[in-house]
Amino acid sequence: MQILSPPILPLNSDRQHEPTAIDAAARAEALSLPMNHRFTLGSEITEVERAFLDEHGFILFSRVASADEVEQLRAEGDRIATAWCEEDRGSVFGVPIFQGKGADGQPYMQRLPFTSCFSEFVRDFVRDERFIPVRGLIGGDTRVGDQEKDGVVMNRYINVPGSAYPKLGWHTDGLRALAYLRLPGPMLNVGLHLDKITKEDGGLRIIPGSHKQGFFSMCFRKPYFVWHRPDAQEIAIETEPGDLTVHDGRTWHRVQQSPHAGLRSLRRSMYVPYLTDAYSPKGDASSTPIYHHVGRALRWAKGRLSGG
Figure 1: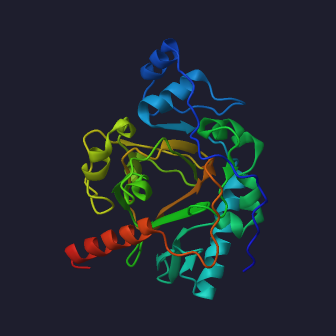
Figure 2 (figure 1 turned 135 degrees about the vertical axis):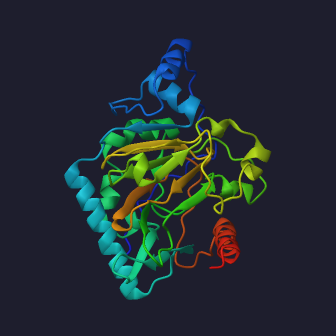
């Protein structure tokens, strides 16, 4: 399968983007809005939207992608997964592919890293001008990390026997930094949701405001990935196809398993790494990052404890 080469980009500085101050009126208005408020993405991020994200650690923009685009993204995920299954591929650029069983009992790729390196449509979509305001939240002079971190990741949760990814336990996205005994700085994750998911369907759960915790709480508030119990402070993020979420990677979040089975339980999403730090591409010779070894060990431990 052909790998698309990343564009040649200047190296960005390692300095974090300095957030702009938020005025008191905007913060008060943001605090008056319900947690499930659906914003509309415009040509720039408003002060109220910025305040909502700063206060709660997440924000949702309604139907940023069209129905046709959502369908094409789903199709591209299927195409890439089919090709990787045929190749019996277990990793991309050192990052493991999660593979389990699908609704038909056949091998099913459930976490696909670096998808924009294998799809011109995905590659062009994540660079569309509509995302410029979102990229501005992250920093000036952002780029798409096609071949950095885990790249553009597609997730495909499904609840069937043999699924490797029916749910995901509590975690923050700061595990990479915590593995090196560093407290993560501000980090925003941009997710596009490809299915209609209500609270009753399972899906994303977030603890609002938990991005403001300290190092000890980020390390030990919950056992990473193996703890699935609901939290009294959690909220469900309900999505329509094409919705876009931005969440601070320091927030505690999880994915609740669907009560449905088979294709009815399928939940697909795509996460885009918009980066500002030093350019650090991966390739076929890249080793598996330490945080993936940690995650694999935790999943193994969970399987042993549950008798799996």
